[in-house]
Image (cartoon, rainbow, N blue to C red):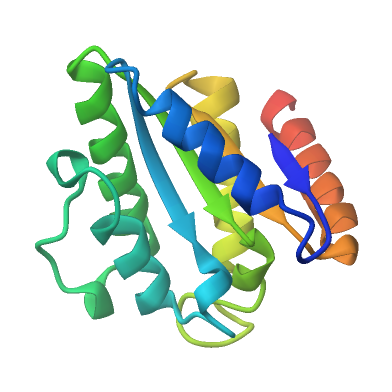
Length: 161
């Protein structure tokens, strides 16, 4: 699910209230990542945010972020999510200000793999293919909404071909 609201619209406040309310349930585990604090996050900062925030029981943070390949990253994400599921709980992944990841590439430049495009692949796989979790992305960037639509349509078409 994608949630759009211009800056200062209250979308993050509403999401935090939803998380607070649903956190009272013992059958849900949230992975919430707030990218609003970073002007331009690096790959390493994103990975640290991704693997060091939230319920420590389900996060895997004992590895070198600088030397992780894209496959390593996604393996760690799957491992965290599958641990939640094995405990009989439902994982919900939330990324606030997803558009901040637009210019992050593995291998350090535009010739590498785009983190955002690879995350879209992951989201489709987690939600549509494997039905492992729910993914909620928030953004305040109007132009990014069109990109999200194009990417999600592309990945869904790719998935069904």
